[in-house]
Length: 72
Image 1 (tube, rainbow, N blue to C red):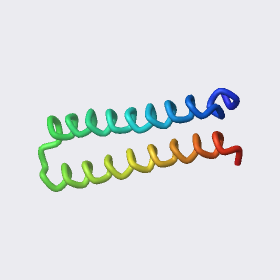
Image 2 (image 1 turned 180 degrees about the horizontal axis):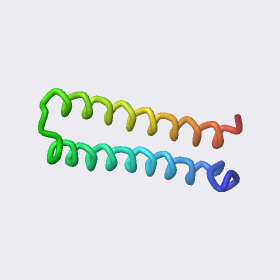
Image 3 (image 1 turned 60 degrees about the vertical axis):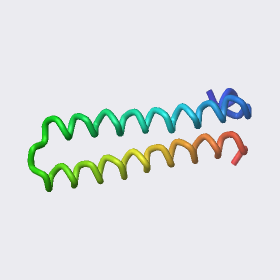
């Protein structure tokens, strides 16, 4: 897997996939919160938390791929 991700095209595709996967997860969790959480304050707290965690996961994934692709 390391050798595969080290190739430039595969690294770009892995980064695009990671961003798309976390974006999709954020949108799906947003719908779940909107449908099932009725307290407005809790909705806002969960939405902010979900966005932050998805951003953090995407950033960590991108950095991991870049470290492998750049050989560091």
